[in-house]
Length: 387
Image (tube, rainbow, N blue to C red; front, side, top):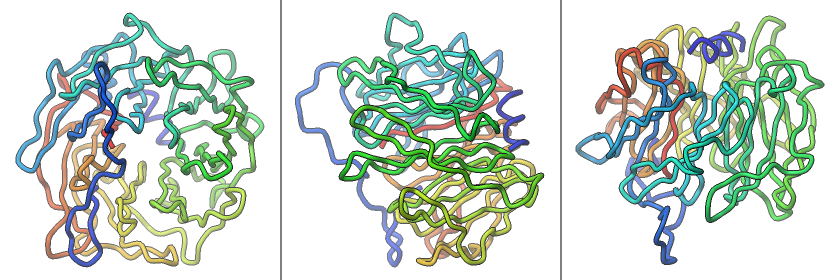
């Protein structure tokens, strides 16, 4: 928590627009025969706990009636995890730490986890944010500073499709923004026809960096920087809408959410009316699977701000927003069924809350259930779900 919260200070539900009816899973079902590390079509949530007494990962299965811990949860680790990522096939969970390691878990058919690589790390690198690309062949790692340096970096690792083990691309790592800034969050577009994608990394007071990524060989190319709105502001959380038309960035100092249109070569342009006011201390941001609603955790106010997103990128507050959370909400995720939004709170009370959409008021969040993710204080700092 000590480092995650410092970086924050510096720096779900698939519904139809008209009928509020949940739609299917984002990724198609796997039809090939599988005997080990088989993908699951069930609905699982994984939470990183960063306290010294509860360091590790907690796993949960969610259904229309219950939220229950998976077999063996929580899974202790000797590191303080800072980031999680699940591959598109739902077979691997990557757990990164600013202590300088990435661990790999196999996701079993019942949602339980098996620590791979004989229980040792699969890469030695400081981690603040992780994402598997849309091909499932690459893991990108944003570092606040690499093990050898104190500058923000982005690194690409190829993923062995059978074992999940990582191999660093050549050259693999690039320094972001000339080494200025502190990386806090990474998001990526889907790979396009030329096998390229665009990665965006928030750098706190140094704004947002744009990086072009090639899934052909893992090449990363720094493509520019978007400054913060003010010199004392910090861009922290990032998210994109489903068609990657807009990038959303939470910005402290002005307690607002920036909406940025994504143009040619991944360029960013602020839309009319941006930034839009949130609660105090905006941290993470989430866009629902339909692209209709945008949610922002306010870590200082202990709330979630909710907005309706229009085709032009403008935001209108949802009736009843903001919605109360536990203490210090820092991350959100949309579940596999596109029916729930889960938020984790580093200050607990509770560690994790799960919300559903209100049947009568579009975008409004209704409490569904809560859960402890570990022995208090768990310091839940990150969440990932099966797809």
